[in-house]
Length: 449
Ligand code: TRP
Image 1 (spheres, rainbow, N blue to C red):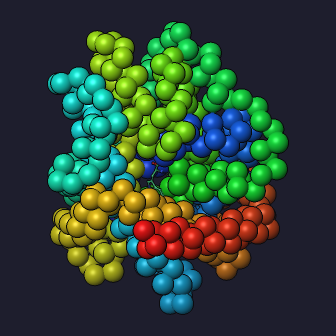
Image 2: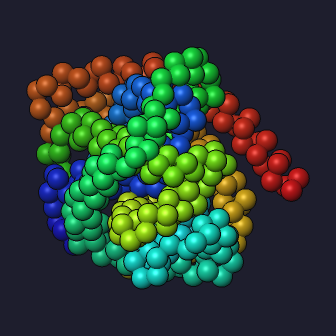
């Protein structure tokens, strides 16, 4: 256990923390959800809106989590009790619940990607992608790969902050950046690349007036930046006061955006060079697990090599994200019940594995869980965090954001807090309102069959 005076574990280096936070952010959300949402939401218009929301919602909210976490030196439940009082403890438990639910279906999707990667490497892509996806995504096969992926996640979390999480991030994240960039360069050489870029980044500026596109962009920002459930808070609780928090948040947010943007430059040319747009508009999952594999299959040997790298990189991104989701739950149990890391990680990981059997057997259940936990709970959590950091705990958070910051970033702290106080809560409240309505109708739809 790394000493930080209190005996609490700590990150070993500044870069280690930044890569771990970026590892949490960069995941399935970047490679799968972002390109798809951009093409649905007006292309370049969506990308522009997304950058603006990252600046005015994402970075301030990430700093709310960083500030509260480093101040408290505790995982969410304990942090809120210590800094804000017992009335806020239920919010901490809401975060833990969100972590349990998100990880349980996230791991199912991650299991599919692992399976595609292994099959690409050893067997090649199946001739009929749609049929094959039906086999991969349901029943015992899906459960088995979900269990295997959870076992790997648990193993790393058992290794601790420095020996598990930081070490895995320092190794895996640079690898991910290089492979994603290499794949995007390769995609630029394809015949259909131009048409793919046009479809991805078409400037449909009237979509900027569409509230549905705003809601989609805001919830994408929450999910992609791992905000609203105390994930960033928990990582920051392992920091000492020498970390430049505003700068770190900016680096993490732009790394996350960069990977998402480049993923689109990869996915769309591949799909358009094989005229597979039909499979894309059918569903988000369709783009990733049906359209891309059939393109890779059509490319023969080259497609097999590229496809292997593609699914490997997806699995790597998913792993560093899954680690952060499990860490929130594990660290909360450790702090609350004084349990050892090993027992807490195995216990909470086993619970997630069990819950995940439902979405592994039923993709409709998976979609519903994503609506409830991956959107609604995160947005509600984000609102709570903004109110807490910019109103109730403003003085403490301000002090925390100043400590360790360079003079340039110190000058930005009051601006960031003003945005967190006056701009973030109203926007997030409006998004929350629409998200509640949408989720209710999704729940009704699910139970109506
Ligand atoms: N951000 C990750 C992705 O884009 C997923 C993720 C990890 C996450 N930790 C989170 C989402 C916490 C919400 C909250 O794939």
